[in-house]
Picture (tube, one colour):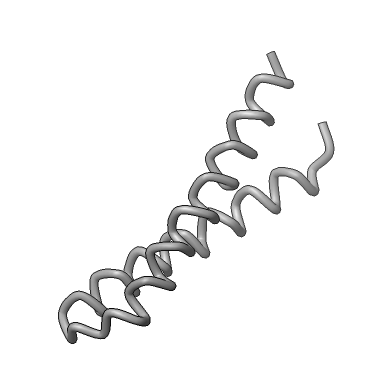
Length: 61
């Protein structure tokens, strides 16, 4: 199990958390263009972070 995959999964998860904060902020100030990019970022990085972590956990079993 390469440790680089663990680091990538954690970094993707951190980016996802920051993007979730951005979604909330953009909703408050009603900036819909930035909201669109924030939502896309949450979906893409969230998927890859969860998928990477699941992949690491299933390889270790």
